[in-house]
Length: 392
Image (tube, rainbow, N blue to C red; front, side, top):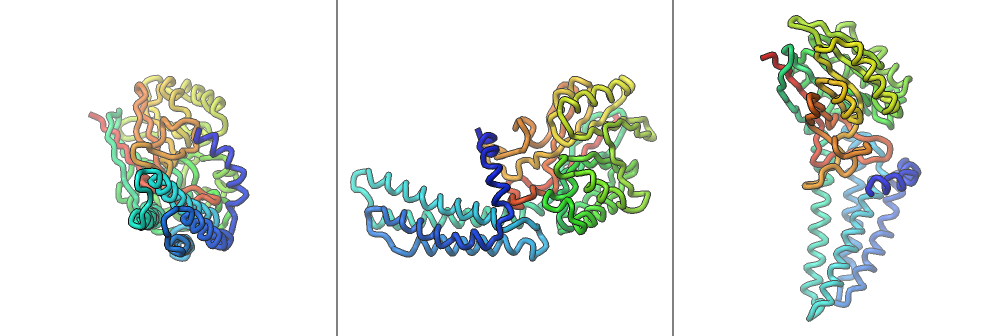
């Protein structure tokens, strides 16, 4: 149901996503007026200005926080659509509280000034809670980089670091932390599973330069290997701009396009398969063709941007499958998980999955969605994935 709703709202989203922040800001008085009117419907005497003042005050705080993000070199999304969404949520809280009080009025004794005062306090607490979540999601979690380390048996001892969905807008403290932490992990192999630039900036020369700079500072003993991500993000021109000048030959990233590659190691070989996301049916066929060319007992590592080849990878005997794309949902709720993952199924939203003899890891990624989407993460921090193959 949620996916049908999102599909229905998508044209509206693309229409309002470039909206400047000033337009929703001008809607604050409208929201405050309507919220105040809704509160005045309650039968008990009400303060006439409490709700409008509260809505305008919190709305201005929302606008200030969203405006601060690019000024503080944290993220570079638009102000308009996120502010519109926050204003609508705060208005909805007022309506919900008013509805609750109206329901209380049906009980014996009805509404009293004390109960309505408690209702006002409840609205204030809910709005403060929303502000706290907003600060965490905009300013704290997107930069709380986590390292997930997993050990699994393998034919060779090999430390693999996965980075996914960098979505670079500019180099911020998140990208600087990625460089420092990845190199500090001393990887044998680095794999990149797509979406290197933010969709809002994938043709922006500064973002392209900054993405090249990030990649050029990564280093791994046996090299760095990458695949394209979503076609809308990793366009041919964007990929050319990011990977054509990404540092010295020692740091050159090898971009795999529907091909397999033998990685010769001191203690044995592994085969790396990189498939470009185009059409799942086509991509399944490519996977089968590549697997047919690899020695039957070889250890295989698949790089594919989404987890949509999970069943095909298991059927083909892939040993280790790295994916991204979902961002873990970016916004997750307790007991529910990701609100939206941009995939047909929420089954593989984030983390490690065991499919027969195949291990699938879906990374939460590093960056965030583009266009008018808020640059926010909640209960879903960015992630560096480390998988250690251990030869017993």
